[in-house]
Image (cartoon, rainbow, N blue to C red):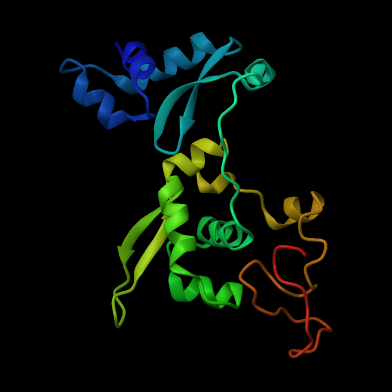
Length: 194
Protein backbone atom coordinates (compact mmCIF):
# COMPACT_ATOMS: atom_id res chain seq x y z
CA UNK A 1 0.00 0.00 0.00
CA UNK A 2 2.83 2.43 0.83
CA UNK A 3 4.52 1.59 -2.46
CA UNK A 4 1.29 2.32 -4.37
CA UNK A 5 0.71 5.59 -2.53
CA UNK A 6 4.24 6.84 -3.20
CA UNK A 7 4.14 5.76 -6.83
CA UNK A 8 0.85 7.57 -7.48
CA UNK A 9 1.73 10.74 -5.57
CA UNK A 10 3.00 13.73 -7.55
CA UNK A 11 4.70 15.07 -4.40
CA UNK A 12 6.84 13.40 -1.72
CA UNK A 13 4.73 12.09 1.17
CA UNK A 14 5.40 12.35 4.90
CA UNK A 15 4.96 9.54 7.41
CA UNK A 16 1.85 11.29 8.72
CA UNK A 17 0.33 11.52 5.23
CA UNK A 18 1.03 7.83 4.65
CA UNK A 19 -0.34 6.82 8.06
CA UNK A 20 -3.55 8.81 7.41
CA UNK A 21 -4.23 6.70 4.32
CA UNK A 22 -3.31 3.30 5.73
CA UNK A 23 -5.49 0.98 7.84
CA UNK A 24 -5.29 1.47 11.59
CA UNK A 25 -2.30 -0.25 13.17
CA UNK A 26 -0.14 -0.05 10.03
CA UNK A 27 3.51 0.89 10.43
CA UNK A 28 4.51 3.16 7.51
CA UNK A 29 8.04 3.62 8.91
CA UNK A 30 8.68 -0.12 8.74
CA UNK A 31 7.14 -0.28 5.26
CA UNK A 32 9.45 2.53 4.11
CA UNK A 33 12.47 0.73 5.57
CA UNK A 34 11.56 -2.47 3.71
CA UNK A 35 10.83 -0.63 0.45
CA UNK A 36 14.10 1.28 0.65
CA UNK A 37 16.00 -2.00 1.09
CA UNK A 38 14.05 -3.67 -1.73
CA UNK A 39 14.71 -0.84 -4.20
CA UNK A 40 18.37 -0.21 -3.25
CA UNK A 41 20.63 -0.59 -6.27
CA UNK A 42 17.75 -0.67 -8.75
CA UNK A 43 16.68 1.76 -11.48
CA UNK A 44 14.45 3.63 -9.08
CA UNK A 45 15.13 4.17 -5.42
CA UNK A 46 13.14 5.35 -2.44
CA UNK A 47 14.65 8.66 -1.31
CA UNK A 48 14.09 10.87 1.72
CA UNK A 49 13.21 14.45 0.77
CA UNK A 50 13.16 16.57 3.92
CA UNK A 51 10.54 14.94 6.14
CA UNK A 52 8.92 13.15 3.21
CA UNK A 53 9.62 10.18 0.91
CA UNK A 54 9.43 9.69 -2.86
CA UNK A 55 10.57 7.36 -5.61
CA UNK A 56 13.36 8.82 -7.76
CA UNK A 57 15.44 7.60 -10.69
CA UNK A 58 18.74 6.17 -9.44
CA UNK A 59 21.43 8.84 -9.68
CA UNK A 60 23.73 6.65 -11.79
CA UNK A 61 21.01 6.37 -14.46
CA UNK A 62 20.19 10.05 -14.76
CA UNK A 63 21.95 10.17 -18.17
CA UNK A 64 18.99 8.23 -19.59
CA UNK A 65 16.71 11.19 -18.89
CA UNK A 66 18.72 13.67 -20.98
CA UNK A 67 16.24 13.47 -23.87
CA UNK A 68 13.46 14.82 -21.66
CA UNK A 69 13.72 18.57 -21.69
CA UNK A 70 12.11 20.67 -19.02
CA UNK A 71 12.00 24.35 -19.77
CA UNK A 72 14.02 26.01 -17.08
CA UNK A 73 14.11 29.60 -16.03
CA UNK A 74 17.45 31.01 -15.02
CA UNK A 75 17.54 32.77 -11.69
CA UNK A 76 19.02 36.25 -11.63
CA UNK A 77 22.17 36.81 -9.65
CA UNK A 78 20.13 38.62 -6.97
CA UNK A 79 17.71 35.67 -6.76
CA UNK A 80 20.57 33.16 -6.54
CA UNK A 81 22.24 35.12 -3.75
CA UNK A 82 18.94 35.55 -1.91
CA UNK A 83 18.17 31.83 -2.23
CA UNK A 84 21.60 30.92 -0.81
CA UNK A 85 21.11 33.30 2.12
CA UNK A 86 17.68 31.87 2.90
CA UNK A 87 19.02 28.30 2.68
CA UNK A 88 22.00 28.91 4.96
CA UNK A 89 20.44 31.35 7.44
CA UNK A 90 16.78 30.34 7.65
CA UNK A 91 14.50 31.47 9.11
CA UNK A 92 15.63 34.88 7.87
CA UNK A 93 13.83 38.22 7.48
CA UNK A 94 14.02 40.56 4.49
CA UNK A 95 16.07 43.01 6.59
CA UNK A 96 18.57 40.25 7.47
CA UNK A 97 18.85 39.27 3.79
CA UNK A 98 19.52 42.90 2.91
CA UNK A 99 22.12 43.20 5.66
CA UNK A 100 23.97 40.11 4.44
CA UNK A 101 23.80 41.07 0.73
CA UNK A 102 24.54 44.71 1.41
CA UNK A 103 21.78 45.86 -0.96
CA UNK A 104 18.00 46.12 -0.86
CA UNK A 105 16.06 43.02 -1.89
CA UNK A 106 13.39 43.80 -4.45
CA UNK A 107 9.94 42.36 -3.90
CA UNK A 108 10.22 40.66 -7.29
CA UNK A 109 13.24 38.62 -6.21
CA UNK A 110 11.49 37.01 -3.26
CA UNK A 111 8.27 36.66 -5.30
CA UNK A 112 10.20 34.77 -7.98
CA UNK A 113 11.65 32.37 -5.39
CA UNK A 114 8.23 31.84 -3.85
CA UNK A 115 6.72 31.30 -7.33
CA UNK A 116 9.30 28.61 -8.14
CA UNK A 117 8.27 26.90 -4.92
CA UNK A 118 11.76 27.00 -3.41
CA UNK A 119 11.07 29.58 -0.69
CA UNK A 120 8.00 30.06 1.48
CA UNK A 121 6.93 32.38 4.24
CA UNK A 122 7.97 31.22 7.69
CA UNK A 123 6.77 32.31 11.10
CA UNK A 124 6.72 35.94 12.12
CA UNK A 125 9.46 37.01 14.49
CA UNK A 126 8.38 37.97 17.99
CA UNK A 127 10.18 41.32 17.69
CA UNK A 128 8.88 44.83 17.08
CA UNK A 129 7.04 44.99 13.77
CA UNK A 130 6.70 41.19 13.78
CA UNK A 131 8.59 40.75 10.48
CA UNK A 132 7.86 37.66 8.41
CA UNK A 133 10.68 35.16 7.89
CA UNK A 134 11.58 33.14 4.81
CA UNK A 135 12.57 29.46 4.69
CA UNK A 136 13.36 26.96 1.93
CA UNK A 137 10.77 24.35 0.96
CA UNK A 138 10.70 20.61 0.40
CA UNK A 139 10.69 21.42 -3.35
CA UNK A 140 14.06 23.19 -2.91
CA UNK A 141 15.47 20.15 -1.10
CA UNK A 142 14.04 17.83 -3.75
CA UNK A 143 15.42 19.88 -6.66
CA UNK A 144 18.93 19.98 -5.22
CA UNK A 145 18.89 16.36 -4.01
CA UNK A 146 19.10 17.21 -0.32
CA UNK A 147 17.47 15.29 2.52
CA UNK A 148 17.65 18.43 4.70
CA UNK A 149 19.46 21.76 4.89
CA UNK A 150 22.06 19.96 7.02
CA UNK A 151 23.27 18.48 3.70
CA UNK A 152 24.15 21.90 2.23
CA UNK A 153 27.87 22.17 1.44
CA UNK A 154 29.98 23.61 4.23
CA UNK A 155 32.29 26.60 3.77
CA UNK A 156 35.31 24.31 3.28
CA UNK A 157 33.49 22.36 0.55
CA UNK A 158 32.50 25.58 -1.24
CA UNK A 159 36.12 26.78 -1.13
CA UNK A 160 37.37 23.40 -2.38
CA UNK A 161 34.94 23.62 -5.31
CA UNK A 162 36.32 27.05 -6.19
CA UNK A 163 33.05 28.83 -5.49
CA UNK A 164 34.43 31.23 -2.90
CA UNK A 165 37.87 32.00 -4.35
CA UNK A 166 37.11 35.64 -5.20
CA UNK A 167 35.53 36.28 -1.81
CA UNK A 168 37.63 38.53 0.37
CA UNK A 169 39.45 36.68 3.13
CA UNK A 170 38.14 37.29 6.61
CA UNK A 171 34.41 37.20 5.78
CA UNK A 172 32.17 34.36 6.79
CA UNK A 173 28.97 33.41 4.91
CA UNK A 174 27.02 35.94 6.94
CA UNK A 175 29.37 38.69 5.75
CA UNK A 176 30.77 39.48 9.19
CA UNK A 177 34.42 40.37 9.43
CA UNK A 178 36.66 37.91 11.20
CA UNK A 179 39.89 38.88 12.94
CA UNK A 180 42.27 39.19 9.96
CA UNK A 181 44.63 41.67 8.38
CA UNK A 182 41.85 43.26 6.29
CA UNK A 183 41.05 46.83 7.24
CA UNK A 184 37.35 47.35 8.08
CA UNK A 185 36.86 49.87 5.27
CA UNK A 186 38.85 47.99 2.62
CA UNK A 187 36.68 47.30 -0.45
CA UNK A 188 36.19 43.72 -1.59
CA UNK A 189 34.14 41.53 -3.88
CA UNK A 190 30.71 40.39 -2.87
CA UNK A 191 30.11 37.07 -1.13
CA UNK A 192 29.25 34.97 -4.14
CA UNK A 193 32.02 35.72 -6.65
CA UNK A 194 32.27 38.17 -9.60
